[in-house]
Amino acid sequence: MSDKSDGQKPFDPFEAWRGLRDANMDAWAKLMVEAVNSDAYAKATGTMLDSYLTASAPFREMLEKTMTRALEQFSMPTRADFVSLAQRLTNIEMRLDDLDAKLDRFEPRSPEAGKTETPPRATRDRGTGDRATPNKEKT
Image 1 (spheres, rainbow, N blue to C red):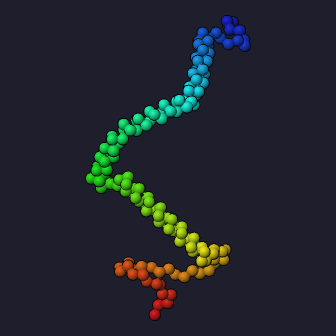
Image 2 (image 1 turned 90 degrees about the horizontal axis):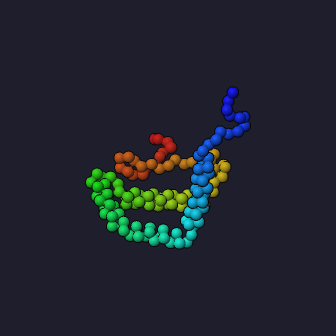
């Protein structure tokens, strides 16, 4: 026969310690939530971040200049190149949207518009770059 009786949990000497630990963690969590949500904490954190950013500004500028020079030596695009390219693409996209809106004002789209035959588009001559309109019939 066994020494354990049915339905009872075996004795755990660390159960009381776990209970104390959980109660302690809950108390600290509540205290920290109250501290972090206070105005004094927000002001102190803001002051520390401002002083950090002020102190690190010269280092960041030096690092940025060094990185720009290194990228230029390797013929790689810099942050400024990417920003310029993004601005140009945004400008092109806005112009295309404006043109699309103007075309919609002149020629409203309808379900029957897809059934009509569209005129052929003008293409550029690859050799000269001149615009050439396609001829429907050749003579």
